[in-house]
Length: 234
Image (cartoon, rainbow, N blue to C red; front, side):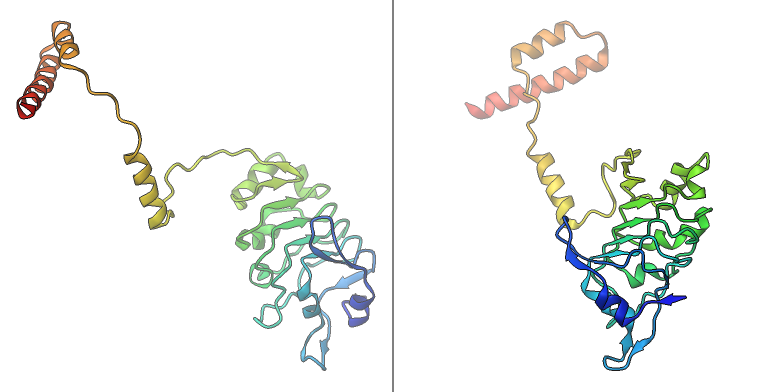
């Protein structure tokens, strides 16, 4: 059983990836437990040494549980945006507090793991910024209602298995708009060009073509406004 250790972290490749994110590559190290021992010199768990990375590659290891991430303010991994967990064949558990432990998590890849049900993925529903998820090669991805079930669980997800999800709903007037956004919308509406007011001659022509009494009354009111306006201009 290989635990995360100081030696494992310091010996792992560390680099800036093509996305300009700082990445640590812990793949193929036989890692089976992320939670490691405390480092007495800094009085913190060894996993806290991953705080300065944006991307964490845990692929091709022996993980069965994605857990062990601290939630304490001083030790949580506040920069991690991407986690790669490809080919951890027994992985089927996610830390219930993962949203609190990894607040900026955006992309997760569980390619060829062992997730069999939506229930095992529910901790991801609390991750506010999660936009990309890969579950190809998992038993759950073979289900008939797989994509719809994932969308129900993660309505803000943009990419599933590297494919963009279609938008099923366009919000026209969200109740979460700020006061300034609402004011700007109102201002834009008030500045929209108005329909031209018909001339007196056009109204008389419409009056001769009116088909019912309501239309006649409506046109007569408009003519009276024209008449009042012309008197005021004299």
